[in-house]
Image 1 (spheres, one colour):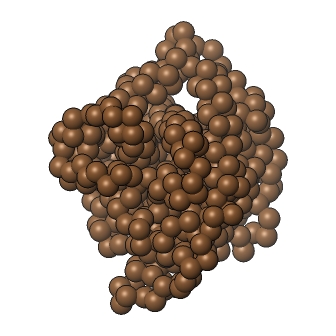
Image 2 (spheres, rainbow, N blue to C red):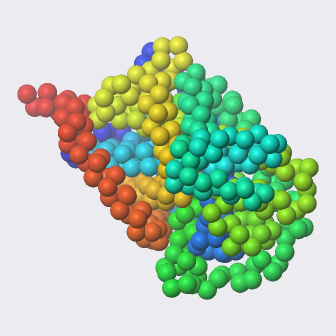
Length: 486
């Protein structure tokens, strides 16, 4: 259970090439674009409204700053790991090298909450914006196929859609992008680069045009008085809001899953991780400030498309459709990166024997884990089609925070175990940075609703059962050690 993979063994795997292995095609620019592609999305265009309406009010900007601080600590730790161990698998791989096989399994299983359910969350928001623009042009999707059985959608003109059978648009976009990923990493990255440029342009346009239409009265009170519940406003509401919008910062984590496909991972991974984080923090705070200044935070309750709602207040109606189309493009890049990240994590776990070989199968022509893409195409679409967006968002946030805390802890362990190992990038001020990263992540986890903890516990219990029933018995490193003993 506690066998560890050596750094030498991981580097040997990273250097493997040819049939059955991932292909190195991503530049530093591609990696930054992957990070920005995953970061700017549902957390900004959708969850910002939810966090403002239910948790922090206009002070959601402070929530973003608090979340960014936690991400900065975790990001510096990720950058050291990614430069030392340029292997697909992200936090799973780092945990295998520092904390042993069982903790690696736990974090790999936890990453399903981060990537797979993150993709489901984004696809639901993508569907909301699609419904908005289709409705505007009198194109109607039968309500049974527009929302899940437990959701109610309010469109911009007041139309309410409730109690459908399945969120079909969310399912279809997951299917489409899964097929794109099967075709190849380089092609997927090229599409993502275009979508990222469009997305940043939209955010800058929103901030620039919206700033002059801010109504200062919408900022009063800037920090609404707490209602008596921990998560509802006041300073505790701000911390809960930070935990909710933390979902928006997982893009740099997704960069690390592509380490085995980077051309120069020792240099490119730190640039991709830290660069994408810095770009997005500034845009997030400005965007949230403008959005809550255009519309009173209370009006964002239950609104999964708050950016469109806020922009409608500017009077630039001729740009409204363009904004929604661009947001759809932005969501598409987030989905693309998350689905890619999830497939790489399971690919690595399967290569280690902890999951069936099905998940490590590489397409001969496209050099992608195509069977894993198919599996998660079905898995993610089930959640996208039937689960409410707010429940998904909380599950993703707690899973991400748990992963970040373990990565920070892993740096402390690795500095003690291998103090002289080559580190192309070194996390500064160790142990201060990783310890603060752990404390902030744990505090934000504490700030989430109790239901999130219950779901996390249930998910982890299922994962532990799978480890002892399959993973432990089929572990390749365990089998090798048993053969050596014989």
